[in-house]
Length: 80
Length: 315
Image (cartoon, rainbow over the protein chains, first blue to last red):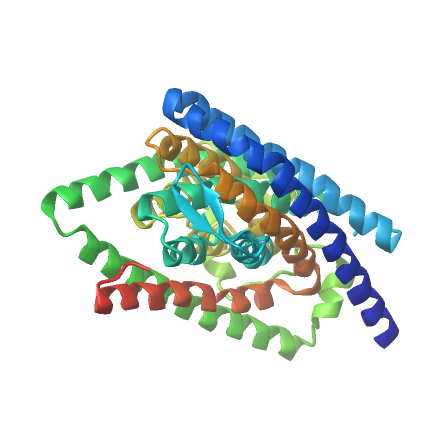
């Protein structure tokens, strides 16, 4: 039981580290370059910005869900 | 570098991404576990770092959309989402949210919006908490007397034994013979008036428009006690429904210039992992225990409102 808990905790910590590295790369590669363009879009075409914002957050949600599920499976060798 | 403040040009704020990710992570766990948006924490957390109130509300809604997608997907994999119920509820919620927003505009014109909203929220949040303490405690005691442990419930894997000590009220509501009657097989409801579902979701939407946020704190308990939806399914379905209603809210706020999508995207990176953890955790808790653990959430809302009333500062 105790061994199981420490294994789960260890896997979780490894997942967090990998996830954090991916997120930091994402911040600098994607969000940094997207910032100015989104600001411009918000000023020029607010309706398109609104639709694009929703698409962007849903797209990110699906992508991150896929990444975390992949990490869960990779490190634990099974689906949650 | 990542600990330093990052500039977000749309809202014109400088915020540390670590702060946003941490807030998102905590709200993600709460959302995945309880089926709430967590706006009562996210709003004040964004305000606390200097974001304008209008941006805090709109950005929080955008982040709720993303977080709910992740949590609802995970709940769907666990069999905790009733799609039919969620789609019906979304229509009532959107209509209710519009009415709530109109009510706010009316109160604004009369000049006493802050006081009325504060008093209503204190009464509503406190009532939900005290009712849920009473009901969950009674149900847990009943189950203990019958010798049913949470392990038994997980092993059986069905929702039929997710009891509520207010099952009598639920049965009475299920017997209301107002046409059209519909069945919700996923939730184990044989027949219920469509109007009851619409009214419940309308009330949820009304509070969402009136008090802000997704109003999961009122919708989730109503789904359990009035519609008779098992707690795990209520959490998952509420999250699915929040995707639709929060998307609508995000759109309306975005066209008013109240959404900084970059802040929402950064917050969501933390929420994505938190929401999955929260959703997985529901497997280890029985329905009444989840409801009992839910109790402090509306009380946090009460504390925030009382603080605002006393100090005059909006958190």
